[in-house]
Length: 232
Image 1 (cartoon, one colour):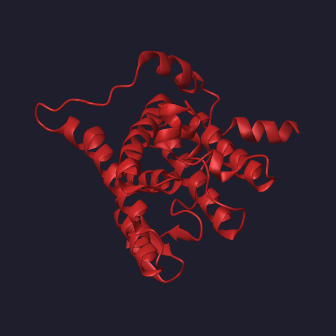
Image 2 (tube, one colour):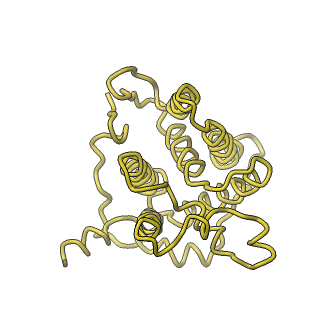
Image 3 (cartoon, one colour):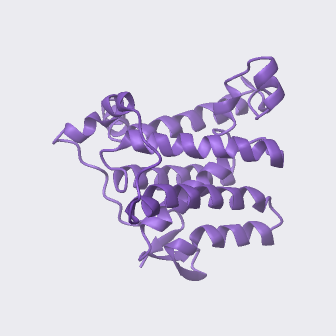
């Protein structure tokens, strides 16, 4: 138990919290403690019945417990953790702001596109931001094709479209991820550019304490390509 707690505490806070929420919510639905009808995104119930938890729960449910769920959870955990331990190392508050930014825009898109579960949108955004921050990484996808990291989200968009899945969520995640990338990494580095997305100081004080801990060591990632595919 102590070893499990140690391993759990070694996971960065945002990755740990989001992963545990996804697991807890999915297991609760699987055990019939909750129903998908209680957690999907519904603007009317949020505004008129004040069911505010739907603003969070709609991002934390990946469907029934099966191979697809396992794939998605490993996928989310790995890319989320790689972002928080590398591009956002010591900046978990900024990482949370990225989640909030993506969440707000996902909800706006959901209102117009009638999407009820937004976990896939958020996942695609995470993958897109990671891919743009690792442009030189080559990924071998399922042993079939090899692409540069920035093309990874588009490959998954194409796969979703070919398989007849809802590729709209992939596309929305790509658009949101690109907008975040431009606002956070492109525009501030232009002449007369500045940061538009600013993290409140109280979040920095709350979440960025690890940055001052010399004993904290992020988990080394030997395969930055993720589950079922690797870097070359």
